[in-house]
Length: 363
Ligand code: GDD
Ligand code: MN
Image (tube, rainbow, N blue to C red; front, side, top):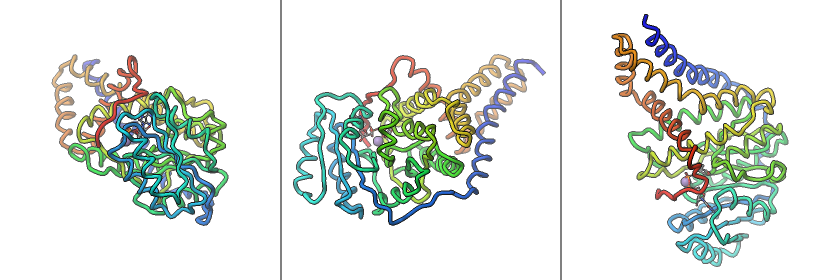
């Protein structure tokens, strides 16, 4: 066989084999027991931090949503951090607070916008809760006992952080977003059962406040603030888990979907590039090694394979390329290939713009 064709075929095989092998491993991990002693009656004091930048379209609904939580009011504090919004988000929050005096709500107003992590750190500095929860404006908690459920996991001292599983509010283009989520929820759960997942969700992430402070708060130089803090907590020896009974509904932008995916991929790449494997406790090592590889290296094998096959242009190479194109009719395959393009575009874009302060997308 032509060496370039052979190289292309091998690269393509490696590219697809890696995630399939990891998925098979994850399915095995899913059968593991949790090994977590939950306590549904555990109600630590909780601070819910809400970073807000120009969120008038969501703010009241979001506050109402959290207000509906059945968590004891005297053990709950809300901190809204507004970073110089220009649409009156802070004023709307203040008005909402006046009509809900039974909820401890504090508004921190930043004089200028310095990004989500900086805003969260302001809230962390003033937080009085034993548990620090972050949540985005545009997501909803469909479970009234979401905070109780999150807390029940933290009753076990080996657990340092808990996050939700996600379901998209709408499917995204051609159901891609929904397909992507199904696959990722399985990985998040499997990793959590094994030890810890290095991917957390800003829709609902709950951390032991003392641990957040110990790791230095939210990283200003990594866009995936939610995931990076969780990973650092896991490197520090506590488990960071996606809870099997905790669900969030996230808003998916209908306009600018691809841009949104690239930005989030940029943030994940920053996160995995900055999470050192050598510091991972043994059960965390295979998880982190796989995720680092899948996010940072594996996408490029697909590109290299496509290039090698195109350049060699032998009948076998062209047949393989045609097969690769024909398979795009299958949703899981199409979803996977799209993700590879988002990751490559994101890696390239990270070279000149890390998107640490990002443009708001209407959802
Ligand atoms: N205070 C403040 N200051 N809040 C901000 C800023 C800022 O500079 N930038 C964004 N936010 C707030 C938004 O108002 C929203 O409540 C939340 O942070 C998330 O921002 P979105 O614009 O909705 O971003 P997303 O949906 O793509 O965010 C997802 O990915 C991010 C990482 O890529 C979420 O999971 C985020 O939690 C995550 O950080
Ligand atoms: Mn969002």
